[in-house]
Length: 471
Ligand SMILES: Nc1nc2c(ncn2[C@@H]2O[C@H](COP(=O)(O)OP(=O)(O)OP(=O)(O)O)[C@@H](O)[C@H]2O)c(=O)[nH]1
Ligand SMILES: [Mg+2]
Image (tube, rainbow, N blue to C red; front, side, top):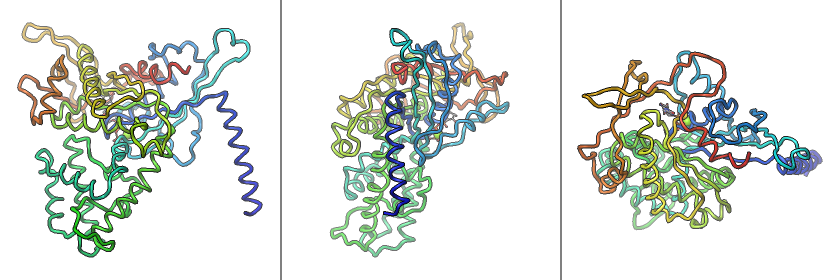
């Protein structure tokens, strides 16, 4: 070790103890924000930050009157990209606002809140500071957890069975045809390996677009800078009688193991393990809109996700992380698509979905809660007379045409079983009396540019659940 290395490591030790000492007085709360692709993560985080910096729209955050300052700070982890708050906010707040671009990786931001101390200690302690590290990561990455327990042969058998199921067979056809034409025992041929991986990825993307949630491995849909790397160039294959390392099957088996070891495990160890509280965003309305198969698939994905939050039950995960998330909030996003009179039904549906997923995951984990929210309210509510009856509707601007419409998306049933039972029984369409149509609304144009937080539904309730007790 050279002198420079020694001084460097001494400096680091001092640095670590200092930040450790600081954390004793200035606690850090790490909040994970996740959800499957398009669930609303980016808009949620942007809105949460905007509404914590300016809290005029946050009445349900009980400690609000005690907060004396809120500010963004450099984040502690140098290797994670910073959440691009300013550009997302600018996109949403512009005179011609647009939804933020899709994001595909992990990112982070630190927001600090200074609060007045109350009670006896007030004179002694002065203000206190809470650092909130918000970590955004794709929910698809959690769906990779089961892979850690599986061998390549087991995973392949399961993935093939899933792809051949009636609801997916058509989407998987291109890949299955290619697979049929290739021989797992033939010598590894890289172009052939790439074609198979590509065909498999195309199938996963098609499944995702059709509204399916279970589309592991997560990095195949969200490769980021791993695109084209060997760890992502494999696909399920039926196991030949004899496995040799230089064959296509042998190479894929090796790459599957590399994917687990070098991509999945480090995520759980380095990022997931440090999360104290978690919010899981669920596009429940989108799944209902996509039909019973999408709802059933979402239910299965939620139970997989719950398994990730239950390290005790999962031996591999306990070994990697060793600790538990304390609280998990499940939120049905984009609730501004429906009138508030329908929100209890939406929350009820999410609760029922969650209860089922909990049964499946044999849940005895952290405290959970479900609610319906809109991170950015794109509609206004209205009641109108229709065929002699009052109808609750929402009014907004359609994304596609730019046209302003007033609409009643359909009534969610009061009993969530009316949706969950047909979904579980494998129905392909909803019963006739349930119809539900969900358009995409454009973000609202805000007249005044003063930073007043973003118009939302129940973001303050979400914030109260996630950080309220720490303020
Ligand atoms: N009306 C309405 N639409 C929303 C809201 N939040 C998200 N959306 C819609 O959902 C889309 C996806 O939201 P994002 O926040 O980008 O979702 P994400 O989970 O970050 O998506 P990925 O980065 O692609 O995984 C947006 O482009 C909007 O069309 C909301 O509060 N209200
Ligand atoms: Mg995003």
